[in-house]
Structures are given as structure tokens and as C-alpha cells.
Length: 428
Image (cartoon, rainbow, N blue to C red; front, side):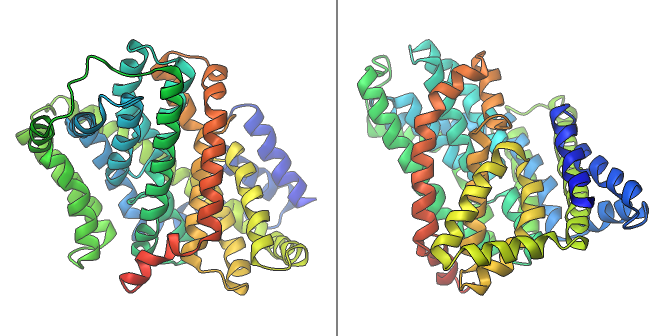
């Protein structure tokens, strides 16, 4: 009865288009009042304790760093570097989009932010060069999902908060899977563009002179991931401190080096970052309460028993979890899904000998695919807005790309060293 009320009210609120954080909180509160399982103050306690983590301090800093660097000219210079190498190839702009998203992923930690920063510049250019709208929007949305796989990654921080896994190990575990997905999207873009004869004849021919000029101009942009990741793995600062360093770096470079960032922009940037952070924290707090009510009703135990009875080994278990997470990614916000589901599944996968870092990467990649699957695919909506297209148009272009990403997911799922080699190399 309690579970039916909890999930029923949650589903109804989502259908009514109530924001995910409010839906989680309201369904928890309705269940608390109707069933009397706990006191109403339980929700307030969940809101406080859910956000009470040192690791979570990285979230607002990474959000703000992404905003500063997108406005401060760093994203544009990353595009220029990629364009110097790839501009005259078939699908040059699409390739530039994917590669620039991979670089920006090492700055922002957010999928939608990556689409907005890079796709906002490349989608109009692709359309102007004759690319079809479904492909231009879809490849930008898909490349943006790499933003939560290549470190730093806000969902990875959430996973670590929920499970106690090392943030550094998770960050390093996402590098190879993120690069794998990026290469796959480049291959698809090249083949698709060659078939449709998408090539920019006006782009400057490749020359080391152009490459050198773009690298010199973009050197401050290229140093961002070096400083963030090098500082973390060099033992200079923690991931949380690295996020604060990224903010200071983005502010100084944007204001005083590139000078694309103006003092008048700061109010809007800080306001936008605060709003995004507040949204994430509300989701985190309400999802914590939602998950605790499930725990009181022994739902995690029942799910664990079911999966253990059906799955006779790690291969079948991971198949079932992948299917469930792909479905969940279509309907639930990524951070909420991680906070609720990670503590449920981690004991099961560990009992079957699956590395918790590997499982965390599999979970994040699954939910990253959720960024480009309707009806909740946030990246799709950002891309639609930039391309001035209907969701149905972009969905037509995303279907074959989803096939490529799911193939990558299977490789990441069943070739564990893709996720664990680098963390092991660094002693995690």
C-alpha cells in the first residue's frame, strides 16, 4: 500500500509536469501523511542530511566554472582548435562538435551545459552549411552527454556521495569510456556526412600554421583539464578544491586574458549557477527521503532478492541492470536516479565480484544515454531550442546514434578494464 501510494503519486505528479525535485518531495510527503510510517519532519531531515557532504561542495563550483568558461571564450577557442584539425574533412563541423564537447566535458561536468556551450555555436553553423536539422541537433545532443562521463562529472560525485566510492577513482574511470564514446560518434558522423556529402569547402585547408595559431590562442583553454585533473591526481588538491580552482581560473582567464567575460555578465552567470545548484540540491534532498521510505518498506531488499534469483551470474545481472537503467533514464532525472538506485544495486553487484568503480561508470553511462532519450532527454530539449526544431525532428536523427551509444555501453559493461585500468594504475 505504502509503495503503491509513493510511486503512484510520484508518477501522477510527473504526468502533470511537476519538476522532478518537487515531485519526489511531494510524493514522499503524501506517503508520510497518508501512511504514518514516519513523522513529517522526516522530509526536512532528508533535505538537510542529503546535502550534508563535503564532496557535494564540488557541484556548485563545477557548475559555476562551466558557466564562466562558456561565456569567457574558452568554449569558442576549443572549437577553433578542433576546426583547425578537422574543418575540411567530411562532416568537419560535426567532428568539431564532438571533439569540442569532449574537451568541454573536462571543464563543465554537465551534459546540458556542454550542449549549450558547444552546440550553441556549432548547430547554427551546421545548418548554414546545409546539414540536415535532425542530424545537426542529434549529434550535438549525443556529444553533450559525454559531459557527464569524462571527468569532472556531477553525476559521478553523486554516485560517490551515495556509495562512498572514491571521487578520484570514479573520475579516472570515466576517461577511457568517454573517449570511446567520442571516437564512436566521430566515426558515425564521418560516415553519415560522407554519405550526404557534408563538407565545408570554404574551410581553410589543413596547415600546421593554422593549427599552431589556434593552439597559441587556445592554450589557456587547453590548460583547464590539465590543471583540474593534474592537480587532483598529482595530490595537489582534492576534487572539491579542484572545482574551486577551476572557478578562479575561469574568472581570471575570462576577465583578464581573453576579455570575453565582462563584469556585467557576472550577475547573470552567478544567478544561473545558483539556480542550477539549488535545483540539484533539492533533487538530492528529496531523493534521499524518497529512497529512505523505500528502505523502510524493504523495497531495496526485495529488488535485490529478485535480481539475485533471476540473475545467475554477473553477465545476466549487468544485462538486467542495464535494461532497467536505460528505462529509468527515459523518465527520471540522472542525479535522483543515482541517489535512489546506487545504494540498492551496489551490494548486489559487489556480492558477484563486480568492481564498484566499474559499476559506477556503467551506471553513469546508462544515465548519460538518458540525456538523449525522450521524454525526459534534457540534451534533446537544449538542442531543439538551439536548432529551432521540434522534438520529433531531433528524435529522428538520434535513433541511429542511440544504437552506437548502446553498443559502446555493452563494451564498457563487459570489458571491465575500460573503467578500472586507469584507477588501478594510479593506485585507487
